[in-house]
Image (cartoon, rainbow, N blue to C red; front, side, top):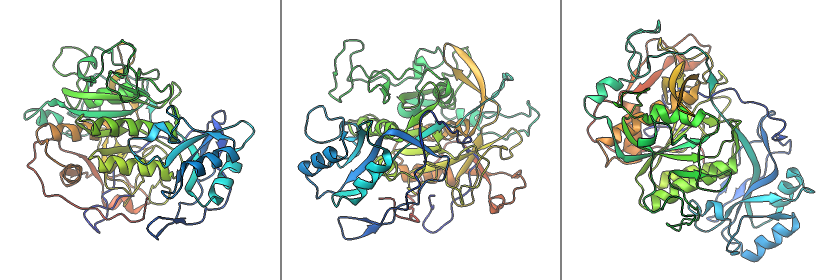
Length: 488
């Protein structure tokens, strides 16, 4: 995945994701077509595409993702759509896909909806042969990385571990110590890209981002961003401004980042004060498409470009194959100075040999997170990787907010990820001028080495790090990252 500090190897993380679920009803199995030919870039270079996704990875049966070359024309695109019996979301009829306008200002990236008579394989074959197409790929299906856990614990051991659950004292993220300096700031916006957020929850409502350019409930797109009444965020599935959670997963992650502190009820997040932007692209069943994930990221980049102080995206999901389109969108977020925190996965596997996306993208703003338990050991389900996982954070039996004014205990790298996203926001609350590169530098250099890295038949055991201390930091020197492979 990402290489840190020039040629320095990345430090393994403890915040991994869940096992990839096979959802036959959602779409098709991974395509068996051969690896596509190298992509000819407009500057004369080539990008070598990733190999086909492993068997068991699923994708939507009614759409594909495509990036056209910059040299193509609207007429070229119309001809291609006609040949494959496809269509794009294009309300103003300018030949440009509406959903990715913020991350691709030239309109070259698009989701193509296919006629029922056309298979994904047939569409990809035609698209990849067209000289005006840079790349074409399936619209992979991804999943939330969480594992429900029935027992109820009233102690937030991930914030402050006294050994109350039988674990090791101080195996936590030092949140209590950090709160002596700062409890967060509503000026810092964190986007939760997930199943949505219960923005009516009494432990979340006061910390929800509110769109300053939108008048609630008037049925108008007041700020002109293409979404009506997007008061607290965006729903990429319904393409509207209602990102209300219908699953629990996104609300649980949001509570870890920023459940209101000091209000006498429920739990407290890493940030007692923060602004949470809800970006819904996963369904009530916890699954969603790559295209909808990209639309969610596009919305976030658009809000950042419009002046919203969005600095962090929390991504507790994965399971699709390598998607160049998704990589391009994360690269666009990096250009917008947004940190992209991602769950490493819950398959208990080595991401160095079996990548888990989006955590395994080798892009500067990506932080891959594994899960640890209350004894400061790698969770049994967590993915790991010497060069592909960055940090570990609490991810076993984590108590947080869930929908309809409830609280639940979940486990997964999904739960570890918001601990790191929250830590990033807390650092920013007292160091708002940090760039994304500097912020990532702080997270990595202030991580605490774990002395309880479990026995594992992998070189990952040589360098295990847990979530960074959230204690105050001075502005650090900017660091640079040298990607190991081209992603665009």
